[in-house]
Amino acid sequence: MGWDPSKIGSKEFLILSTHGGIRAADGTPIALGYHTGHWEVGLLMEAAAAELKAAGAIPFAAYCTDPCDGRTQGTAGMFDSLAYRNDASTVFRRLIRSLPTRKGVLGVATCDKGLPAMMMALAAMHDLPCVLVPGGVTLLADEGEDAGRIQTIGARFAHGQISIEQASELGCRACASPGGGCQFLGTAATAQVVGEALGMSLGHSALAPSGHAIWLDMARRSARALMAMEAGGVTMRDILTDASIHNAMVTHAAFGGSTNLILHLPAIAHAAGLRRPTAEDWARINRMVPRIVDALPNGPRHHPTIQVFLAGGVPEAMLHLRRAGLLETKARTVSGVTLGEVLDEWESSERRAKLRAVLKERDGVDPDDVILAPGEASRRGLTSTVCFPHGNLAPEGSVIKSTSIDPSVVGADGVYRKTGPAKIFLSEPEAIRAIKDGRIKAGDVLVLMCRGPMGAGMEETYQLTSALRYLPFGREVAIVTDARFSGVSTGACIGHVSPEALAGGPIGKLRDGDMIEIIVDRVGLEGAVNLVGPTGVEEGTRILASRELRSDLARDRAMPDDSRIWAALQDVSGGTWGGAVYDADAILEVIAAGKRALKSATCD
Image (cartoon, rainbow, N blue to C red; front, side, top):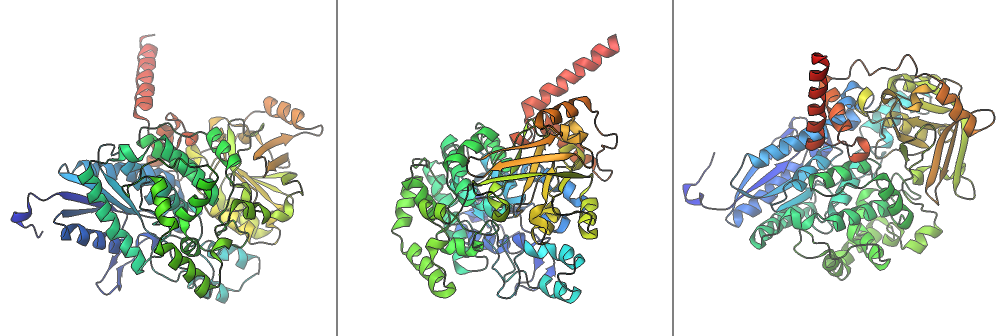
């Protein structure tokens, strides 16, 4: 293994990673990885390990690779997607505990579940120094589509918008570099932003361009920061606090980030032993924080994530947020200083000036058009990120990325209003077929049920949202589901409808042709999703109360037992609104109560 007996007394540091695939020394693929995000993070590990070794430390390395949501969309593989996050976090924690001599942990990760899993694992190491190294982003192709739009070639081909030759060509041109997360502000990129805002990563590390010198330098600097934390006795308990959770939520709102972080940030807070943010907390933050980042997929100009990085990334956006008095600047960071000191250093740094100049000179893009001052963002029509509609179909709430509703279907007062007939589907493939076959028309409300945690592991339904986004009539169609959406999803798409159909939620009482009313105020961030009768919402509520649940409600037959167990455990731990976590005390309490009930029934 290369052990040097003379180094036995050296400090040991563990590098954890979501690395996947096998490559030769010259970069030639030997075995493919599931996705680009984990393909080259091994280079980050090498750079960090070399830095640790040069300082006299002993680096260890361990891996737990992650799946690709883009690869599993519309398949049974998606039933494992969200459940995987908890499993991977458990594996990472077990790997950390299994090296009892480690002095600190460096977590290298990117992409939709691997990165949140790593953040949860590091957050749980209350008494250890830990640093998160985000895996960066893939560059945008010079002649091609981004990795979000490319996933719609099937629907566009079915509707005659592109030929099979065009689809084949486009599919080979989506990525300009072989590593990093997607080029849009989806779940992977948003999780990087949130990790930096939490103080878990170095300043200006989120969204770094994969494969470039500045990307590798981030790994080396992170290794040095980890050793400095260990020398100074700084641990994750010092970094992750209620103040850092607040800063992450504020920054998420300013970026217009993925709604999936509404699942992941509470899970990180839970792992850190902190109060989990609620839907009310998210709503409050989004009402007071303006969106100031213009990025894919929200727009209006749709800058790729690399341009957000060059414009200044997280610290640049935070400068605006600090001026507005929205940040807790005394929160500590893994950089060894407070957030306020990180921002002071950034504001006057040579790095900031150079990168913003590169963006302007090379791409012809003004950095202040990517990350805007709040007043200018408002003048350009950038609206706040998320809204939480309630109503007789979502008595416990739902989520919509209101900023991504097409402006052409929003009223002059900033309110989206729609009433249309329900088209009911019990599986995503069935709904996709209906779109391809032309059975979904402008004005319809596509309702997808039995896809929450109990029915399908709360699968992502990006195939639906992306297909409608790039079809001409798609802006005139709304989606209502108990599933969740991809971080790049856009449109009038209401997810997380609670309770889910299989938990007795009223969404499970809908019939084809029922009239659904949706109201989303993108300014006031209030909304409602209701079944309406001929005389309005009250009659719709009476209809729901008198109806039985549909007789065809059922979990997907392909739902694996692993994910069924995950669904049950997270349900008694606070459910999806609580981050879909495992709360050991709550789970054990329910099991104990169940044992007592069974014993009592047996005695009777």
